Image (cartoon, rainbow, N blue to C red; front, side, top):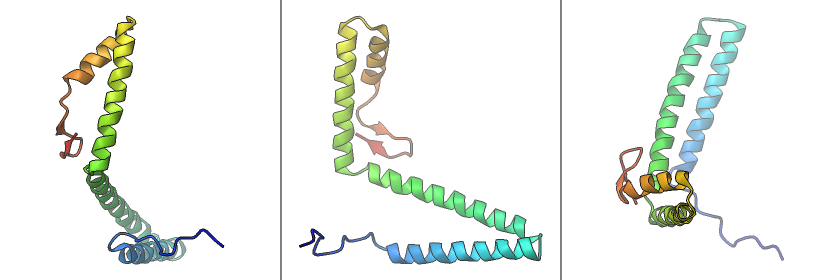
Length: 124
């Protein structure tokens, strides 16, 4: 008997639409580039500009999605645990006289526990 789950995992809202739009975009860009290579060289810079703009938008949206992920409670707990682990290791090194550990420990301790993250959201 296979160990496959009874239900398929639930994908995020809008996944099918996003996949369809992505496929349509990629096909359109491929067709336009092919047309530019074969028949109209003036199309190639237009295609490059479209792809560049799409790349910028996707990178911005990916950054927004990553920032949203970073605000989850699980992520905050894991981050706090990792920071505590780092502090323990640095304290151990500082007790042994490691000057680099002393400097790093001072920097870590002066950093606020909650503050502004790289994308403007609070981190804890």
